[in-house]
Length: 266
Image 1 (cartoon, one colour):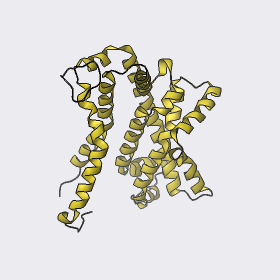
Image 2 (cartoon, one colour; image 1 turned 180 degrees about the vertical axis):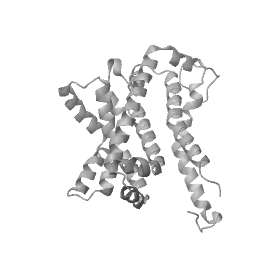
Image 3 (cartoon, helix red, strand yellow; image 1 turned 45 degrees about the vertical axis):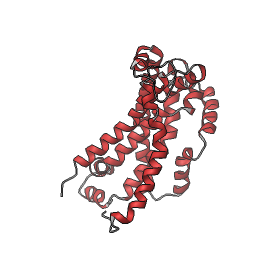
Image 4 (spheres, one colour; image 1 turned 120 degrees about the vertical axis):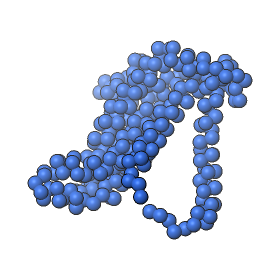
């Protein structure tokens, strides 16, 4: 929607936004040049430039194995969380049943519980169920954490969607599932893509849960980073952090570019 406020009257807002972005993003960007340092320790500015720490990352089995675990765990979490969260958001949006608001509160509760408390609770439950240090345990724990984000994102998309279109499809003979899959879901593709990406990135970057419930062959990349930082600090950590920044930023940017390129030109 086009705003009627002239751009010059919003300059203070642009300046404030730029300051907030600089305050939040600049410390993160400092890690990038540090990952290309030729020194044997973390230093800014780097005394020289080298790719040796990236070679160190791709040449060590512990880093590659942990990356593979994180990728598999994040992808499985994304699929399960997006499917369950989309179904839950749809049911809460169209349903009229007793206890609707309490159920919504329970589903979103993991968002309000401190991560350390959630991790301790899951540690004791998973210990009894034999899910510690397993990929299944990691996926279940991260699904619990990412589910509220999917429900909130999909609920926002459903609020801007005209449910009359689905009702028309059902009045023409489609059952509820067919109408949802062929009429409603395609029009919520941006919310769906945002939910999936958010789930993947949150699960891939999650560190507190990984510290408590992963280990051995199922140690995630963030768990290995945490352990390495505790035992020995070298610029490989900066190289890994730079790769994590790329993984967290490139997919949303690509989705945004693709979504704009498909919009009809005025």
